[in-house]
Amino acid sequence: MIDIAYAMGTGGGTSGQGGGFGALVPLILMFAIFYFLLIRPQQKKQKQHRQLLGNLKKGDRVITSGGLYGRITGITETVVTLEISEKVRVKVGRGNIAGLAQGENPSAK
Image 1 (tube, helix red, strand yellow):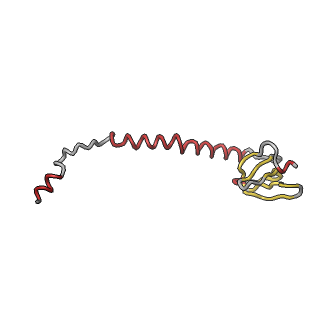
Image 2 (spheres, rainbow, N blue to C red):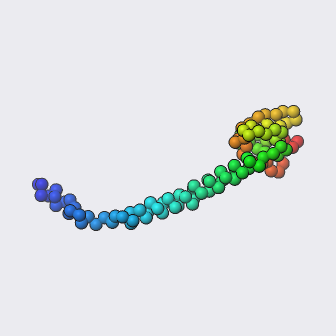
Image 3 (cartoon, helix red, strand yellow):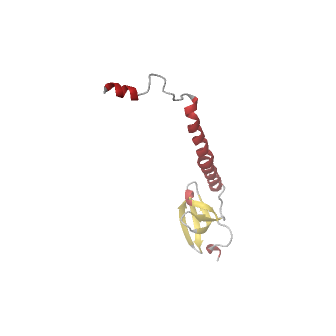
């Protein structure tokens, strides 16, 4: 019975598995695919958002991540004051500005 168990096992060092660089090729390919399809586009989007936040100035019409349209009336390092209607102002975090409002928006009326 013990002889059968040894017969089913692989022989010493002749297992036929390839080692070294051949085993790393699939991992390198997967990392390259993830980098070009997921990581790089996300980094590019974050860079554009940081640039947008750095270029904000008074009078810009923006939309927040919560969906508020407004015109910037005051700006500091971390807080933006938006006028969302005549004499109605709210303060939002600078990072919550999603983008510049384009076209017709509710605050223009």
